[in-house]
Image 1 (cartoon, rainbow, N blue to C red):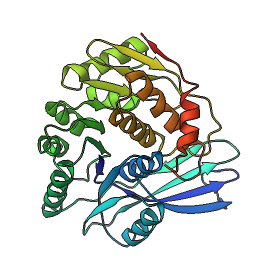
Image 2 (cartoon, rainbow, N blue to C red; image 1 turned 90 degrees about the vertical axis):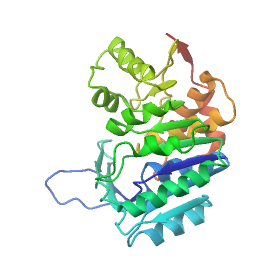
Image 3 (cartoon, helix red, strand yellow; image 1 turned 135 degrees about the horizontal axis):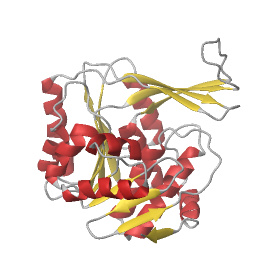
Length: 307
């Protein structure tokens, strides 16, 4: 079983416009609402890919019932730790004419210490029967940056994939996770090193390997994906697709990696499958509604090279 866990889900508004004009009145062609945020996207993606999984999330406020109804309708196995802090609302603005995406992100509100303790206890309970952990998303304001590290220490024998950044990522490296997956911008900010050219990027990635990550995978939207271990480096080019909504692509990439790793796929095949899951997500309006047959077809088009 794969346990996908995170503390900052979102109730997501997706606004589709024929053209987006900042500073003017914009009338929407379509508006959709859905449960989202990194942990819920990853959990939904795992479920659609056919993985045996459980999504563990902290959530609260007026939007929690709607989030529960949606995940129930999708059939996503889930466990909520209820918080008095309301789940954040984020908005995606899709400009159909110009092809741009604008994301308005509300930061997660502070969470009480007793709620963080309840989440940690639930995580330890579920991790005891998991074969792989996927920790994803930022931490609520005021949460100790060592929180993810402490979760991993509660499950020392379970391999973990982390899709996190910043101080919480650096602290989690002390627990020697199997794989970490920042994007290129997040990596640069996390290690305070340049990543503008590929040689600089590889040095920054190897800095995370040296600090405890067995594998480091870095994405950059439609650009090349890189992966490093202590003694190997790989690069692949994601497939070109017609992008409808790029939100959640990184989360689907992480879910695809987790699914492939859990199945014992090679590093080559895991990277190909993850990139294909991200590409399949980009072609959908709502995040993480993956078609596994299309993901497999896309994966077959991707070449991975050792560099």
